[in-house]
Length: 427
Image 1 (cartoon, helix red, strand yellow):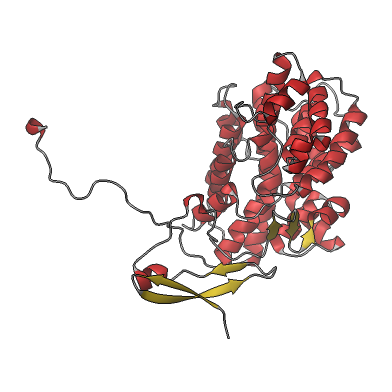
Image 2: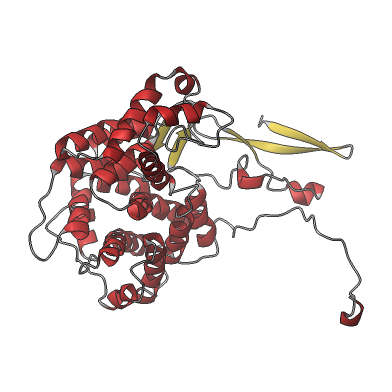
């Protein structure tokens, strides 16, 4: 017998089925609530509302669990590379050796970005925020790829995935080159995906770029850790825009704009801005630890604790090691990073933070790594977007294949009731 939930409203009882996920999550299916009762639910921010069924990512914030397609984030970060994880997230299974080689080769078929895109880049002032440029360039890709992807056609969908993975990386790095006034680089099909990111960003015409394997490995892990994160703000945006049957590039462009917000993808940028403010005030980490513990002080430590993870952020444990390795490898002497290390060390043993489970999160460590690599603070969210791209593609693809209805939330109207119109001369 299927389980049900009973709602009593105005003396009448209504029954709604329960849906149980593969990890025993329980949801009340209220699809017919309005039709049966005339009432709707009110859930600001959709904190208690499931918008879809998905088999991509499982997240348990209380237990600190993150899995892609059933694989733990720990095992993927340890044993796979970013393109392997991208294939897994998008297509549902880890690729064979042959499938992975073909995936990378097929991405190479689309790495060249139309030269006319450079005219669009030239149109932005150097002061433009990289995320604004990235959102615009992503949307502009639609003009150069006007054909609507038929999600039911496996080859069309596969080609669209390869095209998106190829071109997005290039245009993301162009946002940095624009800021710096550097010539725009093209992808080198003889190099790997993450190696290409570093070369696209930093190689100058005057000399070849020298790769640091420790840095490559750390970035590879960071991209994996950001590949998907269930129905967050930007992912939900991609799905709801795509539910109107908007194309893949347009939907991802909307996701980029959602990620731009400081409450979402801008968290690692906020970490560095906080560290810079502490340095400007003398660099006393102990002083700011005390301010963070003072409930009457408005100061908050950025990069500690997480809205979803109530215990610890499993991604932070993985990237902490990588951050330490990057700093040791590069031998960076930076007072900002020294402050970060002092805050981290104190928070990991301080009873106030430990008892409240306010551990450093992935945004804290990613900000440290990006700073060490010389990546400007404004570019941090672009880095997030590169990692999140396979998740956006997978979620868009799943939504379309499931033939989900167009997103159309309801509201509770709280404005004026019907009023008589007042002529202009009587107002």
